[in-house]
Image (cartoon, rainbow, N blue to C red; front, side):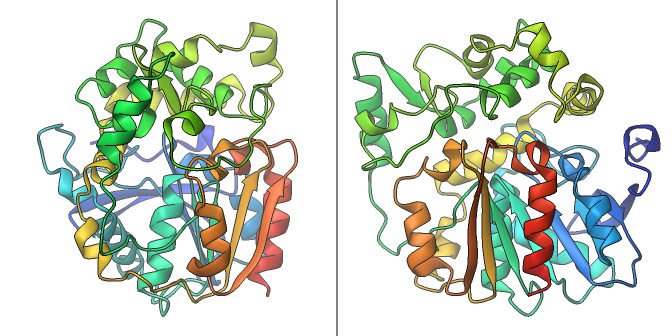
Length: 370
């Protein structure tokens, strides 16, 4: 049986352990601070781990909070999930991910948390936690992925049309989320020519402020021509896989050596975990989204906003803000009725809590304290 993440790769204030009996999972988590203090729950995205919160956990604990960050279903050292492409994909639907989160708090004897904070796909889980159980999740912070509200009862039949239109462009393209739902995606990344470590270096670099091409702007709508204005890590060349896509933007050795927000010793933690388990667990989340698995149960909540105090944080150079045209506007107008702030941090890309931890910590503490 695998051990918790070693103290040799963690900040001194952060410890790792397992929690059993969580909706069929044995959850691996990181925690910091006194368990008697008010609790903050941190939810990572793709392709990340609980480890992605290592830079903010000590400061939040030092400010008087008990901070917990799990490896979510499909990730890291958490076990009990189905890694088979043809297996139980439905267990990765949003409602069950919320159940994982509520179950973890129950197993830790936590009836509520001061705030749930989610980054990337973790922001979707955090948003639904706050919408469905405001009695448990008293505040919510969304990072890098705006929440535009529950899906409508009448769904637009736009997916097939947009894929045909993207493929028909003079430079044929495809959308990364639908690519992530293919049978080949996991093998493309785990068995890529450059190796998992170099693949992740390229992927993290390509979506960070270090890549000079990240100058995001609002798109006019969900059309092939507008979507194709985004970088290729979102709207890929049709005949390229993701490993090939990011290999074209691989940073030079001197840039890698100068990357203080993700030095090689820290990247090795990510690459070691993904070399061991692959990417399929995280990719199952995308399959649920693009195939509509679980969307019917979410439609029941159409029109219901997040009512607890909320905040949005992203990097000013993060295309995640605008990848779904209109999402950030809907979040501000109706999806979050008590939005206390919308912060775009200068010179930060998609990995905002790793690229700009000091600024993120300051925003979080201000928000937690009201």
